[in-house]
Image 1 (cartoon, rainbow, N blue to C red):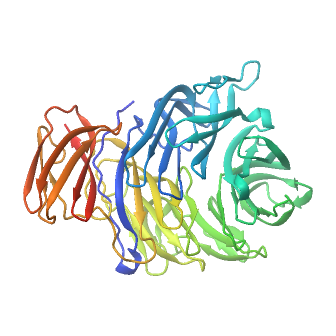
Image 2 (cartoon, rainbow, N blue to C red):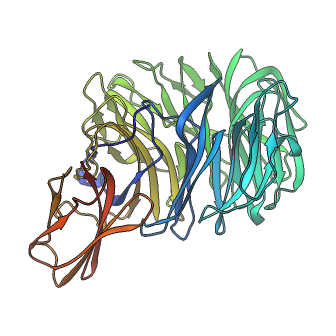
Image 3 (spheres, one colour):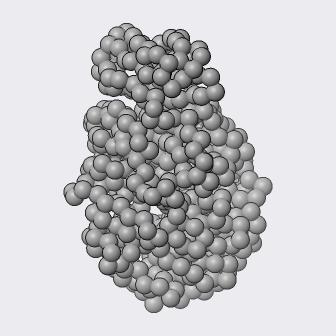
Length: 527
């Protein structure tokens, strides 16, 4: 396994109208990422007040069927990007999904053989044919696990999705390739009710709006399925599906798309009842009145909206005939609601893609670039951010929103990238977390700007910080990945400031620069 170090530089590539969002901060995520260590058992979630948490496998990775498992690593950060808490729990486990509610996070995920959080009973699959079990837990920002349950105790098998509804009611989706189920529990994990989905092979995602209505996405339906008492017929052997239920579990509307595999689509549901489905197409297929185009290469990302009446109102995909390449969805949560209407969606792109509305991207073959974009309520791509130097590992891993004000993007990259015109040091594979504010207004409010330069970076013994754009007294602090201050200095604005790093170990650090009315956070690499 390769220890994660990196050089990152990513950038928006579009006209001014498409660059409204601004990059506030960049945080290296120290989870000892292996080569090609992007997998769906890692996720992020953000509280409305600003803090964000990253939860997933760490260290040596064990592959078991489609699962990627390791020690469980938790990293949380406050609204300014400073570390709050972290732990590494020896285990063979992962995280399928995580949601915020109040000041807490709720997570579900797989474990192999056994799992024990400190202060809680051990979970075990002893005596079962399948060594993979699933857990549900509540975690506080500092990493304290308030409670944990074995998913089997509330009637769940392969639990891949969680959403939170009014009153903190948790909605869980589970499946076994034959039948699926939606289970509702309260905020303490106590069972409320169960909605069986007989003949549904996969439930990959679930969403709930403020009215308690529920949208479910999945695949591999039988020719006849039962959606909690409503019979659904299906003409296809392999399928992608989107279904909406009312707050009592009665099926309202659904859409079935032909496919040739059992993919795992994503879903979002707004308060007006519009459901958004993000999926990968393997063949040309009808979605309502629209036709999904067979991708030019391999991946076939497409996005549709089903309105409150069950009508598919638009399809968004790279424009057929104008694109020579493909786009694939993020490995984690690739779809989140935008507060102004529509959604943010992200993943990876290769070759040349026309996203419509005058927005294009180009990637040097054979590399790939991460991207994320805002698609408005009318199905038009309005904003787009992408890595402008492609490589083999670059991708968006997961997206999360902080209330209606900011977007978090967990990314993965190998070697050189550019993001918002800034350079970040790296050699090898690395996870990183970015926060984007000012999503729709176009007013630049980013704390991090290209005018604050640090050189050399990477550095061996010293770094020089260009403070020419600052005034007054300037405080400088270097934090390690555990959130400890390891170097402190004070200077004045308008000069070049030298900081000594010779006493630090090799690795990634965060430099915090506080001047009059301005605060910046920059990653630095000590060789």
